[in-house]
Image (cartoon, rainbow, N blue to C red; front, side, top):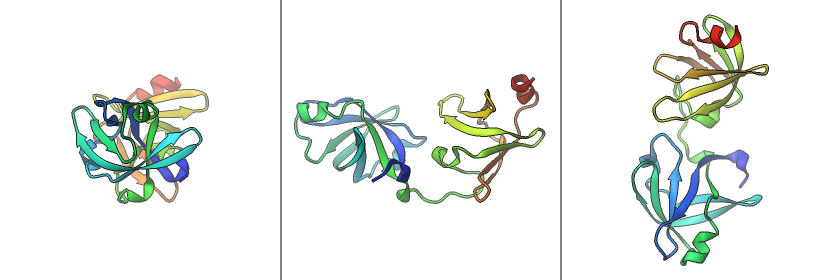
Length: 175
């Protein structure tokens, strides 16, 4: 499996007990959407290696206790610590309208209702309290809060994200 065919799900944060269980941090908006996973891909160097899940128990704040097939002791589990975890893009349902997956819109041209093309979407910074769109306009960074009403349209064919930035925000960054 190639990373290009996957999305970043989270990472192995720490050990969970001494029998091979690990604590998986799910870096997603709704961790409960992933409560019934049966396979994950762990980045072990240059390879995404599949691991079958024996059990997964959601905890709090995005963490889950996971028992992986073939990982039966602390030493085996320790080798997975701080490794990134991925899932195949194919398992995601297709979204439409103004709904999008963070990885889906990376690199999209961002078009503001007032200022037109303001740059390329570099990153969706998924902060719980205040998620942000990081837009790069030449060498300048524009941070737009991803609040209700900001995203007006997602044009998947043209790879454009149409927004209405809060009044004065774009001028603040671009002068």
